[in-house]
Image 1 (cartoon, rainbow, N blue to C red):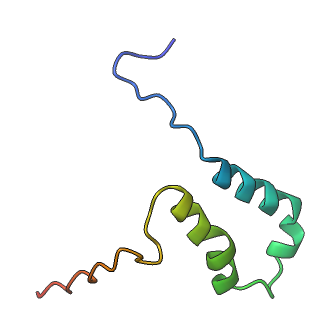
Image 2 (image 1 turned 90 degrees about the vertical axis):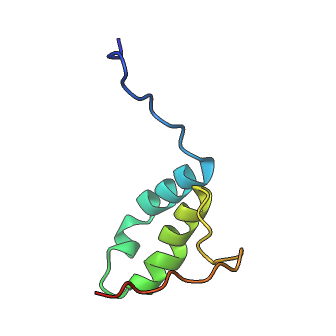
Length: 70
């Protein structure tokens, strides 16, 4: 029984489930030193955030946030 006020799990998008399955199936390949940061970002991280509704490629054309001045 869930506690009063506790949050319920959010359903995981199918695209994220497929990314996890693909990584799991080819784990040995993805854990090699030759598989670099750019590859993991393009093949897994960006698609995951896109599936979660983020505008990773800035399709909306928003300006970048200005740097704060200290």
